[in-house]
Length: 413
Image (cartoon, rainbow, N blue to C red; front, side):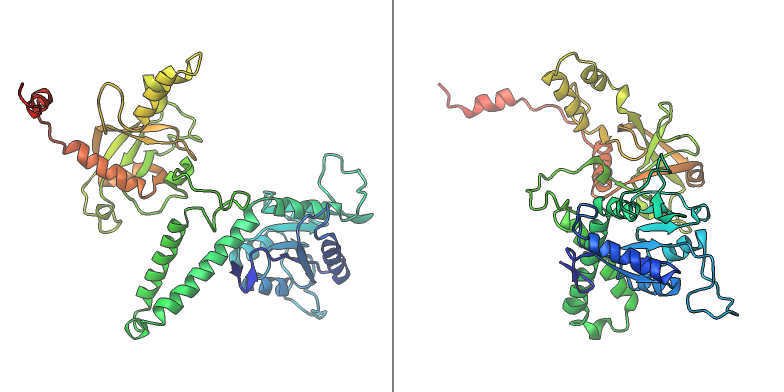
């Protein structure tokens, strides 16, 4: 797999930006010398520049993986004495870069107070320069002398590369590039006479192709954990994959909603949860077809006896576990098949059971009083919709006298 002509296993590209050319070059050289060492146990290629404008061009091209950035406070490198085009400082640096591309940033600066963005390792880190040496990390004991003057920088870079983010981001970009390339060659080029006047249709088909390619991947390639890559698929998914988060702006079947301000980190047990059951096509803003929206109440799993019995059992009871599993599979002991649909806990959503008997309709205009906490992704939203219509539209029939049927099958004695 490759990205922009490079293998996803290629060295990590680090750009060191400092208005002092010597400092920039020294830091880049130190990182290159530390490549594949105990301090930075990854292959890295570091280059230096003293111009933020040059750095921004590199960011736009997408050919770096990590930025080590000084916070400038003077005219740009190479600018004349009368120059008025000052290099950006503080928050402006962060915002300008993030406008172009999302990538990890290590602020290496003597002006840490001007970096007012929050530290959020591995994505944003702040390393303070030291008056009597190159720099030091913000540590519990700021007077501690570093054995290696570049130790703090190496620690920040290692923190970033230790995380799965850089590898994941590189794999995703590579997958998008490769899928787009094959789409253009295999489809657009072949059908150009039919498509040359339909750019919007080409864009739509490409987006759908990209979405389908990630669905087909199912985490076994581009999204797989490199440590477990090649392991056989179990066919099961973690709860986090049930939901679309952040939620789409438009209303849709499967929106999990609460009254506005009713949820504080999902910790209010008295919060009433609902899920939208109306078809998505009836809810399009600006041309909604629905005067009323159908909601099904979602009950906390903790309110069910099967859950209470299982978590309070003194020993591992297969009977109690099986009863809970049957409930989660919408086939509870004692009847009520397909009445419930299980929503596993993830994000702000606690363990919930959609109760297809507890249905209510609200005016479409009242949707504005509800806040979306998550949205059930497909195929789970489609499965819930199908279960809802089958449950409400089921037809009851008397039980067939199977004893009589089976007795009639045997030869008469």
